[in-house]
Length: 213
Ligand code: DX5
Ligand code: ZN
Image 1 (spheres, rainbow, N blue to C red):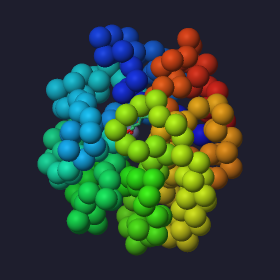
Image 2: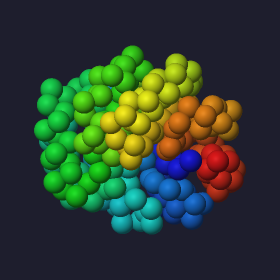
Image 3: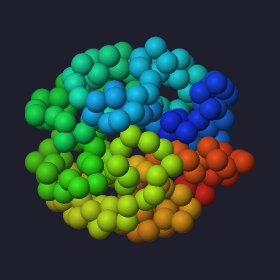
């Protein structure tokens, strides 16, 4: 299991140390939540801050867009060379076109599904994707309760992935911790995002290791 701590739960007054601590603690990716105050009722960080994060991080960035104008934000963040950029299927009329655009920048494209969105919604995009991110909370805030129906959804998605593109990873985001990590593993999940669980632990390293099963 790969682990991507979400810096949404970090202390932004000490962002430099926080990023160093998760990278030294052995995380696999650094998850960056970009919110625009329109698609979700919260506002986070833009390219000015994320470019500093990119300079400090020794692990690749996983940028999760929760925004209305996906193309604008892809163009804004692409120069920072993240490993992944993910966008929400619920907010994109031309997902196939945007996937190609992200790949043309040399970035791995990923699509995000909100809790209500069925995996079949992206079946015909799977062969062009490197990862699908399943939300296990409603997007917008850290520290929310895990929605268990994501486990069944991950299993269904895994079947579609095996048929269409076995290289595509499944990532789950929201309410992840040591209580549900084994269930996620059994459901075929490859990558977990963890904000609250990592950043409230006295040892970020121990928290990250406890999820790398
Ligand atoms: C929610 C974000 C998540 C969030 C996860 O909109 O996409 O990445 O920070 O936080 P936890 O692990 O605290 O639920
Ligand atoms: Zn996220």
